Image (cartoon, rainbow, N blue to C red; front, side, top):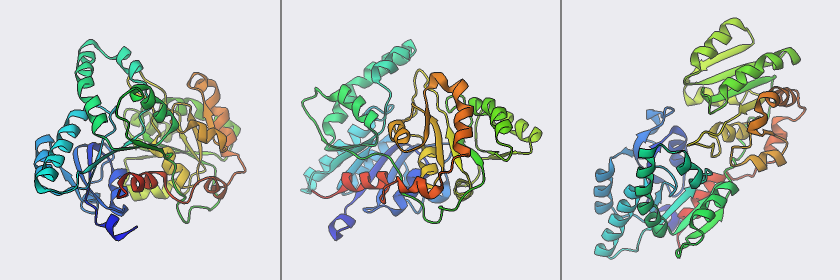
Length: 364
């Protein structure tokens, strides 16, 4: 990292921020300032100071742009939610300040992993929400025209964006940098037969499917254990199962350090996401963290890195075959001879999201 790059002033705009964003920002170079509007359920306030994060609404963010010298602005991806208009206003304000102060025009960059086709989304929206989406269509192209660089975290996201904006007159510089992690040091030890479900205990994440598959897995693998970590609608069902089955452990909403410890002891990470009318798994943070910790992954073809997982010895099921296929896949994974070291051998030395950060924020 050059001295010039280290001194660049980078601002990341997040409509919704989560702990993983703060952890990544705290060690990134150039180190960004995060301006966020809302937080996810897994948000850890203890990470705010280290990540230079600030809770600001739209107009407070605009004031920041008008009073602060900025070199790079990272905005939410254009197909993500209702953030297009705030992002356009912020970028315009920052560029206005640069013009007045005769500084270089700030770069606007974005990291994209959305893999739900906009046409599918519109078809499934309620009538009122459909009108809101149509209004948003006026600002999304404005944001696209403002972007100088875009990094795609998955091939599926690249396909969706090329279909949506491929005919536009303006095309930002683009790169495909897959959202794969680097191995975490010290996590190569051989594991017990522990299957870990991590995240939102919801239907869309496939948690009821894991509960339904567990009796078959339990019968086939006498020493298998099921570890459930997260929070959500399925918490009561998880607690009831743990109460009746000594091979099931439930940990509700633990701190990040405890999650990392459990990831380092699990043989398998399971996240059998199901598509919903208004949602599709983009990548799946538990999948990324599981790979980094050396876990074998069992998931569905809904994740944007499904092809990579299939090609590297993990278990990827079609959603339509989840009911009958999940238990056999879990049995195969938890009894596999593949070690954490084998999982790590397929990963690159540089974390994909960090590589994307460096590409997006590099000086011209």
